[in-house]
Amino acid sequence: MIDPIHESPLALRREEHVVCIVAGSSSSTEGYPERLAERIESLVARDFKWDSFLRLAAYQHCLPAAYRLFKDLGILELMSDEGRRLSEQEYLLSQARFIKKEAELLEVVEAVTVQGIDAVVIKGVPLAYLLYHDPGVRTLKDIDILVRPSDVEAVKRIMEEKGYGLYTALRSAEDYEEYHFHYVFSRGTRLDSIVEVHWSLVYPNVDHRVADDEVIFNTAMSVAVPHATIKTLSLPHAFWHMAMHVSYKSFMGFRNLAELKRIAMKLDTSDWDCVAAWSRRCNTDLEVLSAIALSESLFGGLVEPGFFGRAKSRFPARTFIPKMFYPRALVWEWLPFRDTHALAIELMLRKSIASKLRCLYHFVFPDRQMALNYYFLRGEHTRFGRIRSSLNGVYVGLKVLALISFFPLVVRSRLFGTTLLDPEKHVNG
Image (cartoon, rainbow, N blue to C red; front, side, top):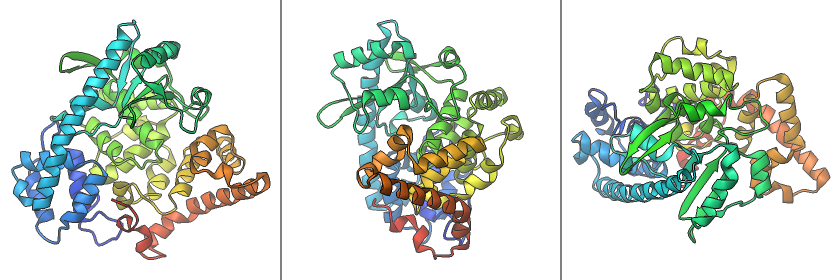
């Protein structure tokens, strides 16, 4: 694990380290690590900036978990007065929001299953019950369910009957069907309830796939929640999916990295064998290994010895890709040149030379999928004519190659000083 007291400007500050402890340990179903209270006390004993801690904890939706952790350990008095007030307030609000989301989920699942449709709930409520002693500390934003592709149209009708509308934003429904892997439904004037209906767990038309959809459904596990039992991904598949999910965010998903640690604590040797075999079958070992390496940089060891050999370790996963990040960037989910960095990760995750060349080509001349994922979302399709768009694409491609070539060196040499790399100076909390 990263040394929090290290002098390097890239290492975690004391405040950031405590947030990592909260995210990785709070209300864990496995119990708290030995001497955790003493560890936290030593971190907050001197030069601890509570305003910075509260800002980051709020940014990462960790305030409810912070309140519960400090309370459980009997060290709530260590918090500043403002910290105790804010964290307790957020804890109570989080409990109320969780109850609301749980009710919405059960409404959707019941409406779907009564029609004889299998629905597997992804992340969200069941994961909170599996990974947290107090599920209500896990802030929920939306509801995700997986159904078979043949059931999607029926589920769309059910959602419309429940008052949900298909939310397309910059995509049409046809774009979702061809280039994405789920629909987004919303209900309420301020999008109070959002449900994502998945027919797959990975993007189409990329280098990876789901090896066998039926395996996902057949191995789904049942989780008891108040007044119901719902199906969710088996723990090995949940670990794989969480790694894939964070890879789609260019690995800038702090809670995803923390929950990889939580799931890993529940996996035994046969489960790790399943993760390794499934990753190979889906051609996603590079995404999984990269996510593991980055999670370990913040939260300590995840995998047992020998896993990387079973998972067909690739050179960039344990070496190059992690060097494109640094601890403070992962905690704050911020990097200089963020947009170019996302494209660089997209390129490095392509598996073959031919696929990398195609990816570079589509940076310069975006196809529909690249445009939807990167260009259209930033409005760049309206800024340039055809010729200028091509010139801009060449510029983008060159920036990506330059970042891959020099960013690890720039970060570790601090060639341009530390201000450029300091998330606190750039993130609005």
